[in-house]
Amino acid sequence: MSVDDNLSLAERGRASHRCELALLALMSVVLFALFFVSLFVGPVSIDLFSSEWTLFGGSSSVAAVILQEIRLPRTILAIFIGATLGISGAALQGLLRNPLAEAGVIGISGSASLGAVIAFYSGAAAIFPLALPIGGITGAMLAVIFLYLLAGRESSILTLILAGIAVTSLSGALTALALNLSPNPYAATEIFFWLMGSLADRSFEHVQIAVPLMVIGVFSLISCRRGLDALALGEDTARSLGVNLNRLTLRIIVGVALSVGAAVSVAGGIGFVGLVVPHLLRPFVGHQPGKLLLASALGGALLLLVADIAVRLLSTGQELKLGVLTSLIGAPFFLYLVLKTRRQLL
Image (cartoon, rainbow, N blue to C red):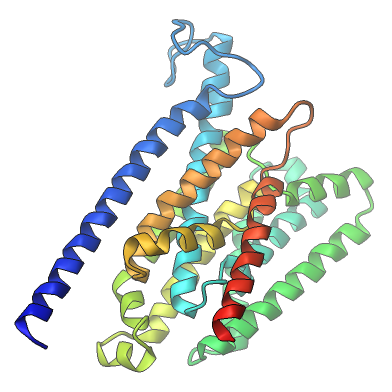
């Protein structure tokens, strides 16, 4: 390679780095603005310039209570759950080297939903409200254990995907069984609506139990940046660069289980965020899996916060479920990806 070629590669690398920083800065600014927009969108109108409310306590007015106890925890959860789903999708797509991968592929989402459904079915959620997120997180962690028992420590990527499909199918069957055998029709209805996904009526109790686990999971995934970049060159090349593929896979799977399990346990089923966001942002980071992680976290937070604002604006009576809206956006996009992938293979 000539000196000119080296200079050209270095210039492209610097240009890609500048583009990544500009993208992250732009998304951060937009997210900061949407944070405040979310606080003032809802069925109760609150004057932005009113002196009757304060965001962080010190007032007992109706506006202050609505902001502090209803809209602030909802907004915080939308940001963290969106970031979790976005970065999890990017990490799994990098690990599996498949642009159609997301948390549902390896059974994490389905198992977390099953754990929460068991909390509903047993009546524990009615007695102990935090049983719901605890059940979801436990379900996600049990899925990881089951996944490794099925696939084995030295498993290939294909074996991991097949084991994930088995876990997803089993979780879906057990969830359907719980709905089918539910002795209380009202409990079955409650489970059904919860599975649609929503952030309505969430409190700081949900924030306190779910956000720390999501943060731990996200940092676990961010620590895999270099390994994912090396894996993009092939498994043999990654091993020659000193990447322990089994350890990398374990860190990603556990990180996804912690973060997505916590997210699903408090919000229900919210799909397609982890699929759509990484695909949209990949060209802006030079198709590098490591750089895509942080960008997808911010992009996922943006998408879910916008979607949560939209369901409040679109709802006239009963609030539109957040998972329904993301599915309406994501399903056509998924079909587009399938058709695009099919054309590339022909």
